[in-house]
Amino acid sequence: MAESVYAQSGAGVRFEWGLAGAAELGRVCAVLVVVDVLSFTTSVDVAAGRGMRVHPFPWGAQADDYARRVGAVAAVGRGAVTADRPWSLSPASLRSAPVVPDLVLPSPNGSAISAAASATGHPVLAGCLRNAPAVARWLLSQGYGSLDAPIGVIASGEQWPDGTLRPCVEDLLGAAAILDGLIDAPGGLSVEAAVALAALASVPDVPAAVRGSASGRELTERGFTADVDLAVAVATSEGVPVLRNGVFTPHPPVIRE
Image (cartoon, rainbow, N blue to C red; front, top):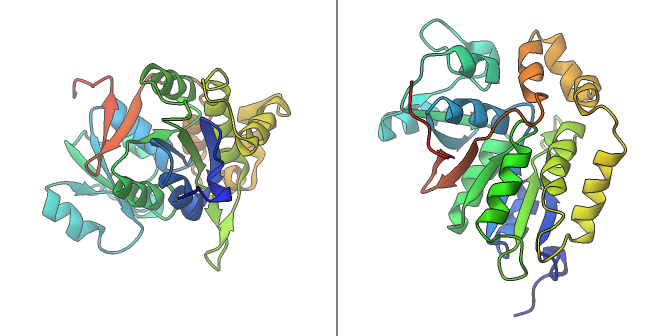
């Protein structure tokens, strides 16, 4: 059966937005990269870099029950951190919280998309501004990016109050930073991926753009400037968290603290 026109056939590197975009590209791509810069994927990079195994989970009250079933600790929302529950969707909290072997990390965007994408059986990577070059190098080193093994890069986006997708600056730039490292992929970039990549050339100061975006300003006004600072530390991480069998683990492996 012929691919859907929305599958961006004929390209080794493809780009889409949100849960629906991940579902579409997940049917045809050999690997997906989920990008959620100001929350989930930066948090995964920080946690995995400290040796924690991260379980993505949709946003909701069932995270604690799931954590108990798999022998993990469940993270809480940014504003719900306590001395007993210091793990949250805040990358800064995960940088200072005690290391645990397994962490359930729910979020309404990147985590929910990652959990759904894992059902494809293909690897799913957590990409962000911090590890964009490392992610691109890993993908090419593993032979992805050809017409036979295409890559799907998914900008998670945010949500409007009614639950609809709100494309956002930070995830577009995070995805573009990964696409920048995939220019030489043998299958080439789709039109959608090339247009997303062009956003990077139009922004002379990526950290400033993310800080000045609606999402960056929102976190700063809520008192989470440290999270924004960690998220815009471009190309500072060599970790490549890969989701297999429902768990993100770092590549190369990390010796736990």
